[in-house]
Amino acid sequence: MFMLGIRSGFLPRSSASAVGFRCFNVKSTPRLGFPCAYSDEETRKILNTLNEEDVEQLYKYNISKYRLKKIEGWRKKFGSFMSLDQVLELDGFGITVLRKFYDSIVQNPKDAEAVAQKAIKKDVKFTTPIFSVNVIPKIQSCVTLYVGLDYVTWAKFKVSKDEPTVLTGWNSFQINDRKLHVSELIRNVTQINQLIPEADVYVVENPAVAQTVAMGSATQTNINVQKSQLIAMIMLMLSNRVPESAEIVPNVYFVKQYTSARLFGIFVGNERVSADGVVRSLMERQIGPNEESVEHVQSKLVIPSGLKVVYEENDSAEREFLGQSMLLGLSFLRLCVFKCEDSLKIFRR
Image 1 (tube, rainbow, N blue to C red):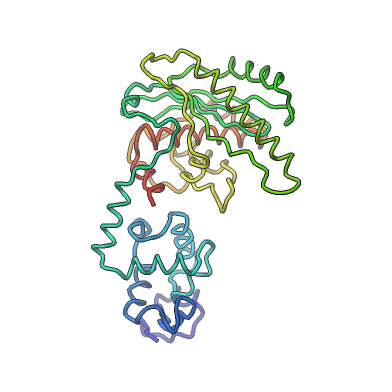
Image 2 (cartoon, rainbow, N blue to C red):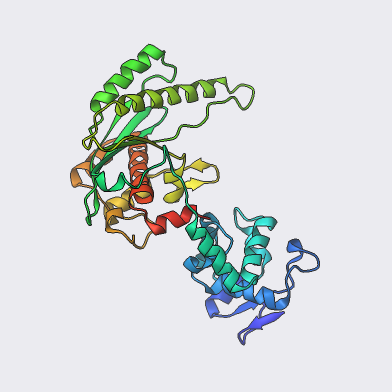
């Protein structure tokens, strides 16, 4: 056993953290390989990296942002990792994932840096059609729509050079039935089209593929079909509008599903969780709850007090949809328009 410090190693982990010493068990890795996947020296190197390096520094190794947040949470709660096996207790860590992570730590640092640089150069496509860089300087306004089962919500943004982005409006339209006839869908879409404000570009999240995955899922399939039809009709109407800048063609874009949820940390497992906490943080600080800063002033978001009141006056379901439409817009602007490096690197791993 390898020990750091002068006290005994028989105290509980929480107590060990409190008195400022660590006891690393370099032999406790049978699940990572028999008899032990790593030498004592390699184990110490891995544990020192896990416990000492900043989370931002750990990005250069073979690990995702989601799993890094789990490591960060453990360190804040318990202090140091005492063995390599201990990381397997965290959600999202299996033996294969952990071995790849540890291997990237053990290898030559120059090789790890080369891998990181290669990842930085990776170009990620977020929209369909592909968003042209020639369009970016011409965008002064953007409307993003979030289409759910019961609501269609939208948010409008004003984009100014060297100034924070401003949320200039958001609104919603309630869908009263999840099994509408096509004629009723058209009537609803016509009303929605009259309410959505004019903008240079319109953005919506790409709908899920509607398919039956199991017996008894016909109802869910029908709902997915209606949602896809609704999105298609809305975006068709918006694409026929004359944009404020006639040079912006096309003016309708589909963003990859769950992009905003991944960017703002509300994608847990395979599900999107509530956006309320992120929205309230943006209202108070102009940045998300897990963000200390944003590198580009345009990435900050100004929400006028009147729109904050609109948000609070709605019920929880409608607030959720309003928040999702706003996060979708901010994600589109950060990733596709402003090209924020801190945001892009989340998707380059």
